[in-house]
Image (cartoon, rainbow, N blue to C red; front, side, top):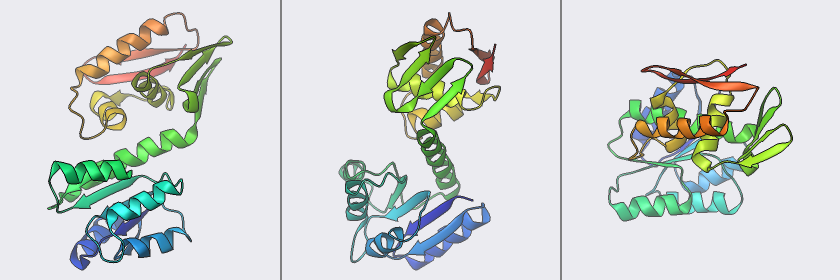
Length: 223
């Protein structure tokens, strides 16, 4: 069960988020400001943090900066009443991974949480292997037959996602959300372009191939 920490000073919102996420299978802990969040984070591990910006004692910007400065890479979804571009820019500069503006659509929040958790799991695994081919996350490298190829970031992440579950079909929308992010301006055709580039680079690979399910998505299949 994934553990989520919510830092929100509005008691009604805090309770609503807690109840909704608990019903959806998460282990949820709530605090009312950034300092309380830091205190509990020093004692417990969480898979994801949801943080308001405007909070007493320690605000969301300061909370995120403090975590990132200490090397903490826990995914963070920032929630705020502020909708100006500058506020969003400051949120991302401080180190947040995603951003939502109140009033919050809780079903959309759930989609964003799941996307952030999937990306975090990809990063944590660090290495994937099929047959004699290995993908190394730290260097964005594909190693096959003793040869190492450094892939562009998006191509690597796309292949790494497919590689993680051989035989599993991923829709274009799933891949777009996980690799490009929920707020991307890119369209689904971008996936096909990157798949085409990967196929060209992998045409001589003997361990696997990328298969298209027309109108749906893609999967990696072992040869």
